[in-house]
Image (cartoon, rainbow over all chains, first blue to last red; front, side, top):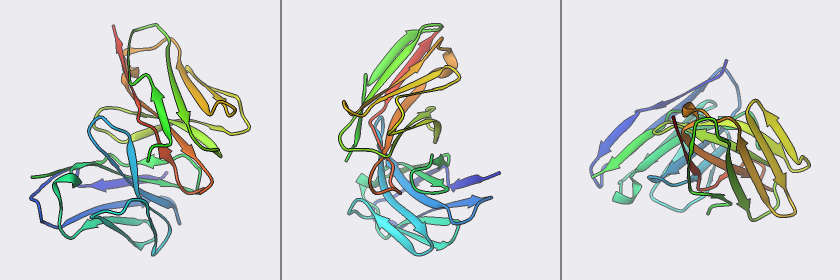
Length: 112
Length: 111
């Protein structure tokens, strides 16, 4: 069966520090991969999605970047965090576009 | 930007009652999906309805879709305390790989 791993679960980082969140999927190949951000009590904002290795689509111009160095690995990064980067970050995968998404358990990021 | 808007934003009912949540969207869709999120956790997919379908059932869940009104509803029958969660609709549109989420309805089911 397929599983998705996302870590860390919580993270507290100072303003101006770098960020690296990692997400890996097991039990499937060539998945679509997604990074969403959720502000407190709000809906989900799509940040990046990828339909293949090295293929990244950015939805919102911002302080973040994403990379997909391997088929089942998706990394969210920042060189210098801002206070506004605080939020709940969710990684998800789907077997193909339009299919249901399978989410990880999320990373709660607090930038201080 | 948000494609879907859920209504109401919050709903409080007693166990055994039915809960109805509505979702409105703006552009033509390929399909619409409903998800559930327990506090502080990832989302879990509940049900998918295609643009050429009008109604779908899964256990205690019933979803309707009215493409002429660009709206969908999620009905949870005979609710339980364990149904307490936030519920989101999400639309898959012309760019097939994207799924755009609404703002969610927070459901509280009390004993």
